[in-house]
Image (tube, rainbow, N blue to C red; front, side, top):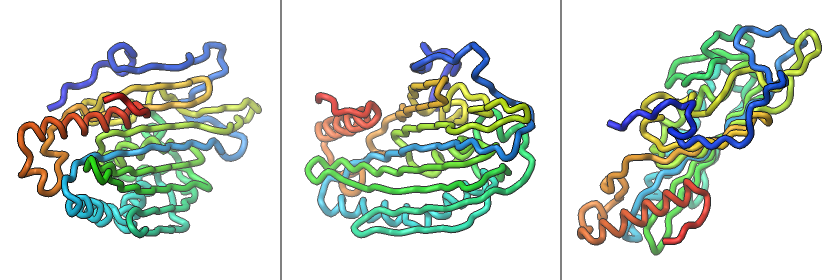
Length: 294
């Protein structure tokens, strides 16, 4: 089993690299108890992240079969079900669903959601992992959830990279971060990049603006213990602008988990070593967001 990460509050132990410091002049306000507002809480909280699944398919037939497999496994119908579960988790109502499968590959789903006026519980606003399938009720309005898939494969190298882009945007009390834990568990994720931003402001009854309404130190704190243990993670946070970014790279690498089709049976020891290096190089480039020398 993966070794557990150490304290998430120690940047030297977890690889956290914070850009900017939390201000100490009282301008940054976090609220754990219920805050009486002037009207509706119209803070916009947006969670955007990419999930990457990497594999190797040796022959052109296997490459085509991989793309077909991904298209069938994560078609518009399956993605709609996943996003419908997310709507249940954050306690919203579905207003409209638009979905489309594409030729030659890929799919998109957009769900427009509306508020469900209920009282939030402490678990909805605290900095902790969300559930996998339980329902959490929140107060949302004029919000949406979208997902797009991008299966692609290098015709010469045989490296296949399946990318999923997901956006969850909410207005109100509940943070879309509560859906992150569930979504990561729905895909075989080798690399995950997550961005979270709170925009706008809401006023209390005294007229004071609140630019964020919940405590957050790291996106990592919204992930379950097994997920944190499985990934190498790095944070780049700008607290004064309510910007949070986390990159995740799967720690364990077992080549047989990355081989598709005949490659799982026909590779020599030398070929296995070469393909291992190429797969790891692909993953490092995606994790770092740049092309790296071989």
